[in-house]
Image (tube, rainbow, N blue to C red; front, side, top):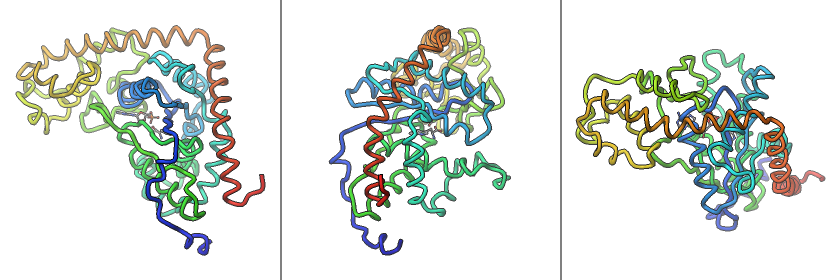
Length: 350
Ligand code: AMP
Ligand code: TRP
Protein backbone atom coordinates (compact mmCIF):
# COMPACT_ATOMS: atom_id res chain seq x y z
CA UNK A 1 0.00 0.00 0.00
CA UNK A 2 2.83 2.42 0.78
CA UNK A 3 4.21 2.00 -2.72
CA UNK A 4 0.87 3.13 -4.09
CA UNK A 5 0.70 6.09 -1.73
CA UNK A 6 4.10 7.42 -2.81
CA UNK A 7 2.74 7.85 -6.33
CA UNK A 8 0.92 10.90 -5.00
CA UNK A 9 1.01 14.09 -7.00
CA UNK A 10 -0.51 17.49 -6.42
CA UNK A 11 -4.15 18.05 -7.31
CA UNK A 12 -4.43 21.68 -8.36
CA UNK A 13 -7.86 22.60 -9.60
CA UNK A 14 -9.50 19.25 -10.20
CA UNK A 15 -13.00 20.73 -10.29
CA UNK A 16 -12.41 22.63 -13.50
CA UNK A 17 -12.94 19.38 -15.38
CA UNK A 18 -16.27 18.56 -13.71
CA UNK A 19 -19.75 19.61 -14.73
CA UNK A 20 -21.28 21.58 -11.85
CA UNK A 21 -23.63 19.32 -9.93
CA UNK A 22 -25.35 19.77 -6.57
CA UNK A 23 -26.11 17.02 -4.08
CA UNK A 24 -27.44 17.17 -0.56
CA UNK A 25 -29.36 14.97 1.84
CA UNK A 26 -31.35 14.98 5.05
CA UNK A 27 -32.00 12.14 7.48
CA UNK A 28 -35.57 10.87 7.76
CA UNK A 29 -35.74 11.10 11.54
CA UNK A 30 -38.52 12.85 13.50
CA UNK A 31 -40.04 15.89 11.75
CA UNK A 32 -38.29 18.50 9.62
CA UNK A 33 -37.64 21.58 11.76
CA UNK A 34 -37.13 25.24 10.97
CA UNK A 35 -33.31 24.89 11.00
CA UNK A 36 -33.48 22.17 8.35
CA UNK A 37 -35.79 24.33 6.30
CA UNK A 38 -33.85 27.61 6.48
CA UNK A 39 -30.35 26.06 6.59
CA UNK A 40 -30.92 23.35 3.99
CA UNK A 41 -34.22 22.80 2.11
CA UNK A 42 -34.79 26.46 1.21
CA UNK A 43 -31.25 26.58 -0.17
CA UNK A 44 -31.90 23.36 -2.11
CA UNK A 45 -34.81 25.08 -3.84
CA UNK A 46 -32.69 28.14 -4.68
CA UNK A 47 -30.03 25.92 -6.24
CA UNK A 48 -32.63 23.98 -8.21
CA UNK A 49 -33.72 27.27 -9.69
CA UNK A 50 -30.14 28.29 -10.56
CA UNK A 51 -29.94 25.99 -13.56
CA UNK A 52 -27.34 23.51 -12.21
CA UNK A 53 -28.25 19.80 -12.07
CA UNK A 54 -29.51 19.06 -8.55
CA UNK A 55 -29.90 15.78 -6.66
CA UNK A 56 -31.51 15.65 -3.22
CA UNK A 57 -31.72 12.47 -1.24
CA UNK A 58 -33.34 11.18 1.88
CA UNK A 59 -30.54 9.46 3.71
CA UNK A 60 -32.30 6.44 5.18
CA UNK A 61 -29.04 4.50 5.58
CA UNK A 62 -27.63 7.32 7.71
CA UNK A 63 -30.78 7.34 9.83
CA UNK A 64 -30.28 3.72 10.93
CA UNK A 65 -26.83 4.45 12.38
CA UNK A 66 -28.88 5.05 15.52
CA UNK A 67 -31.95 2.97 16.38
CA UNK A 68 -35.07 3.72 14.33
CA UNK A 69 -38.41 2.12 14.85
CA UNK A 70 -39.16 0.59 11.40
CA UNK A 71 -42.66 2.08 11.00
CA UNK A 72 -41.40 5.49 12.07
CA UNK A 73 -38.58 5.30 9.54
CA UNK A 74 -41.00 4.56 6.70
CA UNK A 75 -43.32 7.37 7.77
CA UNK A 76 -40.47 9.84 8.22
CA UNK A 77 -39.09 8.99 4.77
CA UNK A 78 -42.41 9.79 3.11
CA UNK A 79 -42.89 12.85 5.27
CA UNK A 80 -39.47 14.23 4.35
CA UNK A 81 -40.26 13.66 0.68
CA UNK A 82 -43.51 15.57 1.24
CA UNK A 83 -41.46 18.36 2.88
CA UNK A 84 -39.13 18.55 -0.11
CA UNK A 85 -42.08 18.79 -2.51
CA UNK A 86 -44.05 21.26 -0.37
CA UNK A 87 -41.00 23.53 -0.11
CA UNK A 88 -40.78 23.73 -3.89
CA UNK A 89 -38.49 20.92 -5.03
CA UNK A 90 -39.81 19.70 -8.33
CA UNK A 91 -39.20 16.08 -9.36
CA UNK A 92 -38.90 17.22 -12.96
CA UNK A 93 -36.13 19.70 -12.22
CA UNK A 94 -34.35 17.89 -9.35
CA UNK A 95 -33.65 14.22 -8.83
CA UNK A 96 -35.40 13.29 -5.57
CA UNK A 97 -34.80 9.84 -4.11
CA UNK A 98 -34.02 7.75 -1.07
CA UNK A 99 -30.42 6.70 -0.64
CA UNK A 100 -30.90 2.95 -0.06
CA UNK A 101 -32.62 2.58 -3.42
CA UNK A 102 -29.33 3.51 -5.08
CA UNK A 103 -27.01 0.70 -3.93
CA UNK A 104 -24.02 2.45 -5.52
CA UNK A 105 -23.81 4.68 -2.41
CA UNK A 106 -23.02 1.64 -0.26
CA UNK A 107 -20.67 0.20 -2.89
CA UNK A 108 -18.59 3.35 -3.10
CA UNK A 109 -18.71 3.79 0.69
CA UNK A 110 -16.85 0.50 1.07
CA UNK A 111 -14.03 1.63 -1.21
CA UNK A 112 -13.86 4.99 0.58
CA UNK A 113 -13.77 3.22 3.97
CA UNK A 114 -10.49 1.80 2.75
CA UNK A 115 -9.22 5.28 1.84
CA UNK A 116 -10.24 7.18 5.01
CA UNK A 117 -7.85 6.85 7.96
CA UNK A 118 -8.80 5.97 11.54
CA UNK A 119 -7.11 9.14 12.77
CA UNK A 120 -9.32 11.30 10.54
CA UNK A 121 -12.46 9.54 11.72
CA UNK A 122 -11.60 9.83 15.39
CA UNK A 123 -11.58 13.60 15.03
CA UNK A 124 -15.22 13.79 13.89
CA UNK A 125 -17.04 15.87 16.50
CA UNK A 126 -20.53 14.77 15.47
CA UNK A 127 -19.63 11.15 16.27
CA UNK A 128 -18.40 12.20 19.69
CA UNK A 129 -21.59 14.18 20.33
CA UNK A 130 -23.93 11.46 19.13
CA UNK A 131 -22.07 8.55 20.75
CA UNK A 132 -21.87 10.43 24.06
CA UNK A 133 -19.99 8.96 26.96
CA UNK A 134 -20.41 5.35 25.98
CA UNK A 135 -18.63 5.08 22.62
CA UNK A 136 -18.22 1.32 23.03
CA UNK A 137 -21.99 0.97 22.64
CA UNK A 138 -22.26 3.12 19.49
CA UNK A 139 -22.87 1.31 16.20
CA UNK A 140 -19.96 0.88 13.81
CA UNK A 141 -22.23 2.58 11.26
CA UNK A 142 -22.32 5.74 13.39
CA UNK A 143 -18.51 5.83 13.37
CA UNK A 144 -18.24 5.42 9.61
CA UNK A 145 -21.27 7.68 8.91
CA UNK A 146 -19.12 10.48 7.42
CA UNK A 147 -17.60 8.06 4.88
CA UNK A 148 -21.06 7.10 3.66
CA UNK A 149 -21.77 10.83 3.37
CA UNK A 150 -18.60 11.25 1.26
CA UNK A 151 -19.85 8.41 -0.93
CA UNK A 152 -23.28 10.11 -1.31
CA UNK A 153 -21.49 13.11 -2.74
CA UNK A 154 -18.66 11.53 -4.72
CA UNK A 155 -20.80 8.83 -6.34
CA UNK A 156 -22.29 11.66 -8.44
CA UNK A 157 -19.07 13.68 -8.76
CA UNK A 158 -21.04 16.45 -7.06
CA UNK A 159 -19.16 19.74 -6.96
CA UNK A 160 -21.40 21.70 -4.57
CA UNK A 161 -23.11 20.64 -1.37
CA UNK A 162 -25.56 23.01 0.38
CA UNK A 163 -25.71 22.27 4.13
CA UNK A 164 -25.98 23.93 7.52
CA UNK A 165 -22.86 24.80 9.46
CA UNK A 166 -22.82 21.61 11.53
CA UNK A 167 -21.82 19.64 8.42
CA UNK A 168 -18.65 21.60 7.69
CA UNK A 169 -16.29 19.06 9.22
CA UNK A 170 -17.92 16.20 7.31
CA UNK A 171 -17.42 18.08 4.06
CA UNK A 172 -13.77 18.69 4.86
CA UNK A 173 -13.42 14.94 5.35
CA UNK A 174 -15.10 14.37 1.98
CA UNK A 175 -12.48 16.61 0.39
CA UNK A 176 -9.65 14.78 2.17
CA UNK A 177 -10.97 11.42 1.00
CA UNK A 178 -11.28 12.62 -2.61
CA UNK A 179 -7.77 14.09 -2.58
CA UNK A 180 -6.24 10.96 -1.06
CA UNK A 181 -8.00 8.69 -3.56
CA UNK A 182 -6.80 10.85 -6.45
CA UNK A 183 -3.26 10.94 -5.06
CA UNK A 184 -3.04 7.25 -4.19
CA UNK A 185 -4.16 6.15 -7.63
CA UNK A 186 -2.57 8.99 -9.59
CA UNK A 187 -5.85 10.18 -11.10
CA UNK A 188 -8.02 13.30 -11.14
CA UNK A 189 -11.14 11.22 -10.75
CA UNK A 190 -13.06 12.70 -7.82
CA UNK A 191 -13.83 16.43 -7.55
CA UNK A 192 -12.86 18.30 -4.42
CA UNK A 193 -16.37 19.28 -3.37
CA UNK A 194 -17.24 22.82 -2.33
CA UNK A 195 -19.46 23.25 0.72
CA UNK A 196 -22.18 25.86 0.28
CA UNK A 197 -22.84 27.21 3.79
CA UNK A 198 -24.38 30.61 3.20
CA UNK A 199 -27.05 32.99 4.39
CA UNK A 200 -28.27 34.20 7.78
CA UNK A 201 -29.64 30.83 8.87
CA UNK A 202 -26.74 28.38 8.64
CA UNK A 203 -27.16 27.72 12.35
CA UNK A 204 -30.67 28.27 13.70
CA UNK A 205 -30.63 27.98 17.49
CA UNK A 206 -33.07 26.40 19.94
CA UNK A 207 -36.01 28.61 21.01
CA UNK A 208 -35.35 27.59 24.62
CA UNK A 209 -31.57 28.08 24.69
CA UNK A 210 -29.77 30.39 22.28
CA UNK A 211 -26.47 28.54 22.72
CA UNK A 212 -27.84 25.18 21.48
CA UNK A 213 -28.60 24.27 17.88
CA UNK A 214 -32.26 23.77 16.96
CA UNK A 215 -32.58 20.03 16.41
CA UNK A 216 -35.17 17.45 15.39
CA UNK A 217 -34.08 15.29 18.30
CA UNK A 218 -34.21 17.86 21.14
CA UNK A 219 -36.44 16.37 23.87
CA UNK A 220 -38.33 19.67 24.17
CA UNK A 221 -40.81 20.25 21.36
CA UNK A 222 -40.96 23.92 22.41
CA UNK A 223 -37.30 24.27 21.39
CA UNK A 224 -38.14 24.05 17.71
CA UNK A 225 -40.73 24.80 15.07
CA UNK A 226 -41.59 21.64 13.16
CA UNK A 227 -42.67 21.97 9.56
CA UNK A 228 -45.69 19.90 10.56
CA UNK A 229 -46.80 22.51 13.16
CA UNK A 230 -49.99 24.40 12.43
CA UNK A 231 -50.48 28.18 12.74
CA UNK A 232 -51.41 28.12 16.46
CA UNK A 233 -48.43 26.01 17.46
CA UNK A 234 -46.02 28.18 15.47
CA UNK A 235 -47.36 31.37 17.06
CA UNK A 236 -47.32 29.87 20.56
CA UNK A 237 -43.71 28.66 20.25
CA UNK A 238 -42.55 32.09 19.14
CA UNK A 239 -44.51 33.84 21.88
CA UNK A 240 -42.89 31.57 24.47
CA UNK A 241 -39.39 31.66 22.95
CA UNK A 242 -36.76 32.54 25.53
CA UNK A 243 -35.49 36.13 25.39
CA UNK A 244 -33.77 38.54 27.74
CA UNK A 245 -35.60 41.48 29.35
CA UNK A 246 -33.92 44.23 27.30
CA UNK A 247 -35.50 45.71 24.16
CA UNK A 248 -33.74 44.99 20.86
CA UNK A 249 -30.49 47.00 20.59
CA UNK A 250 -29.93 49.96 18.31
CA UNK A 251 -27.37 48.18 16.12
CA UNK A 252 -26.34 44.67 15.04
CA UNK A 253 -23.25 44.82 17.28
CA UNK A 254 -25.55 44.97 20.27
CA UNK A 255 -26.68 41.40 19.53
CA UNK A 256 -23.23 39.89 20.04
CA UNK A 257 -23.76 38.71 23.61
CA UNK A 258 -27.49 38.13 23.28
CA UNK A 259 -27.81 34.71 21.63
CA UNK A 260 -31.60 34.40 21.93
CA UNK A 261 -32.27 37.87 20.54
CA UNK A 262 -29.77 37.30 17.75
CA UNK A 263 -31.40 34.00 16.86
CA UNK A 264 -34.88 35.54 16.56
CA UNK A 265 -33.52 38.39 14.41
CA UNK A 266 -31.78 35.87 12.14
CA UNK A 267 -34.93 33.77 11.84
CA UNK A 268 -36.90 36.88 10.92
CA UNK A 269 -34.30 37.85 8.30
CA UNK A 270 -34.20 34.37 6.76
CA UNK A 271 -38.00 34.11 6.59
CA UNK A 272 -38.35 37.62 5.15
CA UNK A 273 -35.47 36.92 2.73
CA UNK A 274 -33.54 39.95 3.86
CA UNK A 275 -30.46 40.60 6.01
CA UNK A 276 -30.11 40.91 9.78
CA UNK A 277 -29.07 44.57 9.33
CA UNK A 278 -32.36 45.37 7.58
CA UNK A 279 -34.34 43.70 10.37
CA UNK A 280 -32.41 45.71 12.95
CA UNK A 281 -33.08 48.91 11.05
CA UNK A 282 -36.79 48.20 11.40
CA UNK A 283 -36.90 47.00 15.00
CA UNK A 284 -34.00 48.81 16.73
CA UNK A 285 -34.94 49.71 20.32
CA UNK A 286 -38.34 47.93 20.12
CA UNK A 287 -39.37 45.59 22.95
CA UNK A 288 -39.89 41.86 22.30
CA UNK A 289 -43.58 42.42 23.07
CA UNK A 290 -43.67 44.24 19.74
CA UNK A 291 -41.14 42.16 17.78
CA UNK A 292 -42.42 38.69 18.65
CA UNK A 293 -45.99 39.09 17.33
CA UNK A 294 -44.60 40.35 14.02
CA UNK A 295 -42.17 37.43 13.85
CA UNK A 296 -45.04 35.05 14.67
CA UNK A 297 -47.19 36.53 11.86
CA UNK A 298 -44.32 36.22 9.39
CA UNK A 299 -43.53 32.63 10.45
CA UNK A 300 -47.18 31.61 10.17
CA UNK A 301 -47.50 33.26 6.75
CA UNK A 302 -44.40 31.46 5.44
CA UNK A 303 -44.65 28.10 7.20
CA UNK A 304 -48.32 27.26 7.71
CA UNK A 305 -48.90 26.75 3.95
CA UNK A 306 -45.97 24.31 3.95
CA UNK A 307 -47.44 22.21 6.73
CA UNK A 308 -50.84 22.04 5.07
CA UNK A 309 -49.29 21.12 1.72
CA UNK A 310 -47.26 18.38 3.43
CA UNK A 311 -50.40 17.01 5.04
CA UNK A 312 -52.13 16.97 1.65
CA UNK A 313 -49.22 15.17 -0.03
CA UNK A 314 -49.07 12.60 2.78
CA UNK A 315 -52.57 11.49 1.88
CA UNK A 316 -51.19 9.93 -1.29
CA UNK A 317 -48.20 7.82 -0.22
CA UNK A 318 -48.26 5.88 -3.51
CA UNK A 319 -47.51 9.06 -5.43
CA UNK A 320 -44.61 9.87 -3.10
CA UNK A 321 -43.23 6.36 -3.54
CA UNK A 322 -43.54 6.70 -7.31
CA UNK A 323 -41.58 9.96 -7.30
CA UNK A 324 -38.79 8.47 -5.13
CA UNK A 325 -38.55 5.30 -7.24
CA UNK A 326 -38.32 7.27 -10.44
CA UNK A 327 -35.72 9.59 -8.89
CA UNK A 328 -33.59 6.66 -7.79
CA UNK A 329 -33.63 5.23 -11.29
CA UNK A 330 -32.38 8.53 -12.67
CA UNK A 331 -29.77 8.78 -9.92
CA UNK A 332 -28.48 5.29 -10.74
CA UNK A 333 -27.79 6.21 -14.33
CA UNK A 334 -25.25 8.75 -13.01
CA UNK A 335 -23.86 6.64 -10.17
CA UNK A 336 -23.39 3.30 -11.95
CA UNK A 337 -20.65 4.36 -14.39
CA UNK A 338 -18.83 6.22 -11.60
CA UNK A 339 -18.71 3.10 -9.40
CA UNK A 340 -17.64 0.99 -12.38
CA UNK A 341 -14.81 3.38 -13.16
CA UNK A 342 -13.82 3.50 -9.46
CA UNK A 343 -13.52 -0.30 -9.43
CA UNK A 344 -11.41 -0.20 -12.58
CA UNK A 345 -9.09 2.43 -11.08
CA UNK A 346 -8.71 0.30 -7.95
CA UNK A 347 -8.13 -2.85 -10.02
CA UNK A 348 -11.33 -4.68 -9.12
CA UNK A 349 -12.71 -6.80 -11.96
CA UNK A 350 -16.15 -5.59 -13.01
P1 AMP B 1 -30.21 16.53 9.73
O1 AMP B 1 -31.50 16.87 10.36
O2 AMP B 1 -29.12 16.37 10.74
O3 AMP B 1 -30.26 15.42 8.73
O4 AMP B 1 -29.79 17.85 8.92
C1 AMP B 1 -30.18 18.12 7.59
C2 AMP B 1 -29.67 19.44 7.10
O5 AMP B 1 -30.21 20.51 7.87
C3 AMP B 1 -28.13 19.61 7.17
O6 AMP B 1 -27.69 20.33 6.03
C4 AMP B 1 -27.94 20.40 8.41
O7 AMP B 1 -26.73 21.14 8.40
C5 AMP B 1 -29.15 21.32 8.38
N1 AMP B 1 -29.51 21.75 9.74
C6 AMP B 1 -29.92 20.95 10.77
N2 AMP B 1 -30.17 21.67 11.87
C7 AMP B 1 -29.92 22.98 11.53
C8 AMP B 1 -30.00 24.22 12.25
N3 AMP B 1 -30.39 24.26 13.52
N4 AMP B 1 -29.67 25.35 11.59
C9 AMP B 1 -29.29 25.32 10.29
N5 AMP B 1 -29.18 24.18 9.56
C10 AMP B 1 -29.50 23.02 10.17
N1 TRP C 1 -24.96 14.23 7.52
C1 TRP C 1 -25.98 15.09 7.02
C2 TRP C 1 -26.76 15.66 8.21
O1 TRP C 1 -26.89 15.08 9.24
C3 TRP C 1 -26.92 14.39 6.09
C4 TRP C 1 -26.22 13.90 4.87
C5 TRP C 1 -25.97 12.61 4.53
C6 TRP C 1 -25.74 14.72 3.80
N2 TRP C 1 -25.36 12.56 3.32
C7 TRP C 1 -25.21 13.81 2.85
C8 TRP C 1 -25.70 16.09 3.58
C9 TRP C 1 -24.62 14.27 1.66
C10 TRP C 1 -25.12 16.54 2.40
C11 TRP C 1 -24.58 15.64 1.46
O2 TRP C 1 -27.28 16.69 8.11
